Length: 261
Image (cartoon, rainbow, N blue to C red; front, top):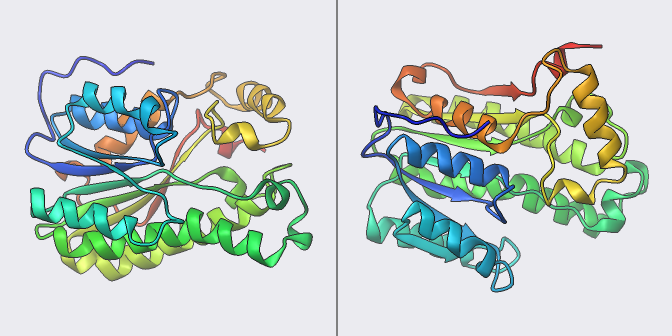
């Protein structure tokens, strides 16, 4: 799929932060393209100086006014991003959190054997970072808004080789529900988007991922894999006022894979 030509700028005037673009195959990139196509103005982050050359041309394509580094492991960088948004825009309408990480030795081993440090790192980057960003976004969402994070089917059932990341995503989905309940009175909606398996740089760290892609394509009722633009357009819809009473959901964008035994 590619982003369709959109005549009506349904999100014109909205401002949002996109976290997690690594390259043009990133889920965050599909989201950024969709939001921009619908007229939203974007702030974009990149992981570090090594990643910057891969993300900067994409940020230019989106004509972003805010482009900053954001590495969860670097103290103060999350806060610096939100301070810049506050200084530049003074408000925020949506946030897309599309980052997850687990050390290779932790991700590749049994959950039962997860080392303490590896477990804590996995949870900090894959789950806590969304909670922290929601806390910082809340005062900027003066007229309500929408918070998005990315999850996967392995949070609900055991997916071979997904291992400790399944535990982290289960915690993340629970956080979505609790934050949706807490922030709902302020008009802030919270969602987890659950794409089907798709080839991203992050997914390349999962052992035997190619086999998982093939299994997904065969099993899904649609018999095709989703791409980042499919995910992006579905996410952007939920940021529109037409979805103002939808919150706390895990939205599967997977061709129906999750409904088939």
